[in-house]
Amino acid sequence: MRKAFVIVRRELKEIFRDINLATGVLLPPFILAGIFGFILLDPLRGAKSMHGVENIPWGALGLPPAATPEQMLVTMIIRVVAFPMFWIIPLAVTSIIAADSFAGEKERRTLEPLCVAPLSDRELFMGKTLTSVILGLACSWAAFGIFTVFARIGTTHAFGHPTFPDVTWLVSMFVFVPLLLFLGVSFAVLVSSRVSSYRSAQQITAMLVIPIVALMIGQTTGLMIMTSKALFVAAAVVAVIDLALYRLATGLFRREQILTRW
Amino acid sequence: MRPNSAPDNHPDSGLNHNPVIAAYNLSKTFGQTAALRDVSFEVHAGEIFGLLGPNGAGKTTTVRLLACLYEPTGGSGKVLGLDITDEDSTERIRERIGMLTESPGLYDRLNALEYLDFFGDLYGMPAAARRASAERLLKMLGIWDRRTDRLAKYSKGMKQKIAVARTLIHDPQVIFLDEPTSGLDPESAKVVRDYVLELKAEKQRTFVLCTHNLAEAERLCDRIALVNQGRIVALGTADELRARLAGGRERLCKLHVRERAAELAEVVRGLAAGHGDISGVEQAGDVITYSTADAEKMNPLIVETVVKAGGHIVALNEAEQSLENVYLELMHDSREAD
Image 1 (tube, rainbow over the protein chains, first blue to last red):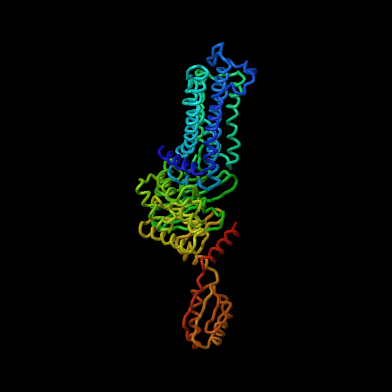
Image 2 (cartoon, each protein chain N blue to C red):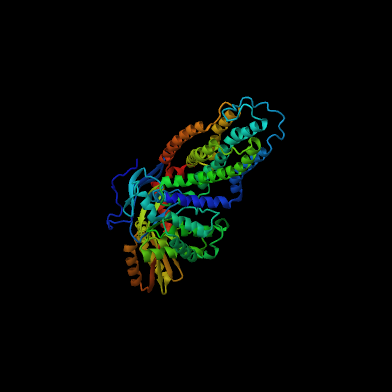
């Protein structure tokens, strides 16, 4: 797999030299973390009433029945709104790079020299996939670090002591997000290797966000609350899909198809 | 499943049987389109083999099959003794070949050194060797001073030079060159051609050169395969191809005489009247020109007749068929045959 990392190094170097691409990828997670962070510093500012949050199962989120509005708002921002956002944003931004992985190289006519080089189809596929996964994870974790600072201040203010990060967040960020990113990115890379243009690849991979948005709607409406236990189950399912997708992708991956599909 | 049919058509069966590259009835079909049909040839160590033909003739497809980028739909092939249809061999073949692709295909945000270092790394070269090889090639190609400029800033010709350097960075044993001097100025094209000849002479490197540049093919190639519509229509040295075309076709001859040229031209015309094999007798100054389809038989007869008539012959030249004529004639013939 050494050669896969040679590809990763080269791709990261190229991404960071394209100021537009780099800011497009790096900035959204940090903006997101900043926005939620600032809201957490003063959650009651601008809040007229607590109507509309009756459906949220506060007990399942670990909130006592006599919780103050500030505690409810802090908990809602942390566990209901921001929580799935940390899945969507890295997935959305890295799938842009993953969609470009083969289709973009083909359009720029840089793919054939790469295909002539002595690396296996698996190394080529993994090189492309790992670039986006590593970038996505780095951005997610850095944004999570920023969010943690704000969330600890916000929870200390609301609860008298910091309650962030809890187990659910840790499982989400360090187990679920890497597996989800691998799934999304490998799907995008596979699509990119089988379509004729970057635009087509991007259109198809954009659909990846739909199930996450559905989950987010489920969370905000109180239909589905992700606890740490539920996250472990979801992570296991995603891991199985990852494995299946990896096998499928490396099985389907053929240089000839990539080079000849226009 | 990859095909692996037994060779049944060895075009070079008289040559030694350790070819560096061998294609036996190679065929490639894309959907309903036959890109390559039963192509067979062998290339030996230290040989420069040319694939000459118009756009879409099948040159690039042939090279991509031999570089294991495509899987053949029929036939078989070997590179350095390794079977191109055997999936276990493909990586080992790629390690030992270099391929200059149709378009340079550079990563514009890298500089020349970074770009060559990336490919050298993929070929498993240690860092010091990558650096030394890149320096040697960039200096040879005259772009060492621009080594830290981003490739996006390079001219078309400079990009082609970088692609040439990439092809050679790992000192491959077999080198496929698809239009190597395309976009290069004459001086740079000469540098590349000279280096190809140097690698052939000093290191016994083997080349397959795809081109539609006839002069380049003639200058570089030991043998040339003329390819058209997915088939090899002729194969041989440039001289052999010329001879093949000349066989049964008219050749223009020029007879230089010292004096009495007009009178001697009449003698040749008289001879032509008695022989259908001589035609178009013309005289200009001291030169008498004529065409003959059988120069071997007719030229001695003309010389004898002119000498008997008291003529003093200074020289007799046969106008050589240019490779361009050979190419155009054979391409025309192959289209007629189809």
